[in-house]
Length: 121
Image (cartoon, rainbow, N blue to C red; front, side, top):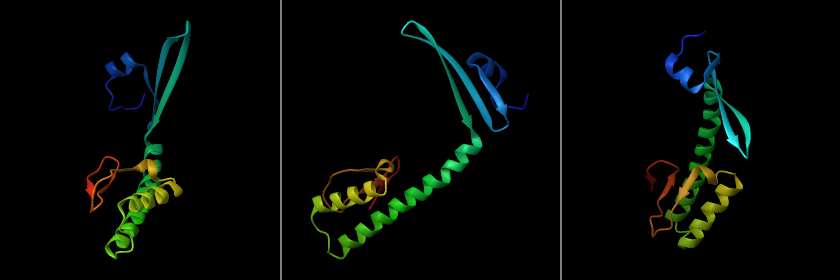
């Protein structure tokens, strides 16, 4: 067996199995509607790394959209609060980025934040 950062006692207790150096699995059994159901959950460290880059690119694309809206506000081309919000939601949704951003309806300067981060002004 490969050297694991997960102690053997915990691996045994929770049924954690190393498939290879980058992949672990956990097998769980539950009773559902009178039948035993078996779940196998896998975690691959390499897949996490591969998924991180596209996610960061999507956040960058969302930031570009926000910057365009900010510039329109500063230039005076977009003044109405509801229109600003509508523009942001429309553009994020069109690019399928709305799930990566949280927005709140508040008076100017229209704070915008990425999910789980500080407010961007």
